[in-house]
Length: 109
Image (cartoon, rainbow, N blue to C red; front, side):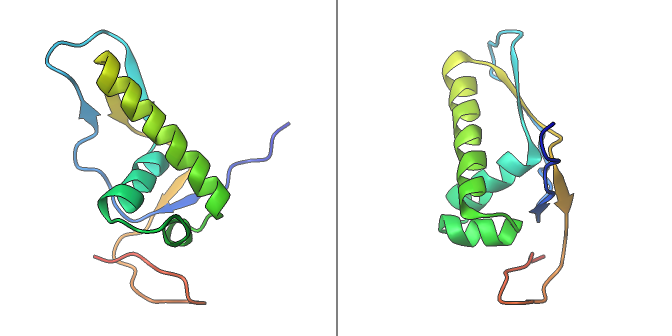
């Protein structure tokens, strides 16, 4: 039996949770919230992987796996015209938390 997944810390709730091309197939891809957060931190905020991993309270190799999975799903949705939903996943939403404990980065408002 596999180990239960540790909760990933997420600091941002996506406002838009479904992306649909004008002409789409009925196929759908689900991007988990932790995958969305990995893309947001690495590509949008331009953080190094180790910094992004610290913000999510996970190891760098785990961050790399989540990030790779997210990029593969996004590429598949774009290339093949699939619907992409953002939902679920093992995560804990923390909004507006600013303190720094043990040199870890925390969420900003």
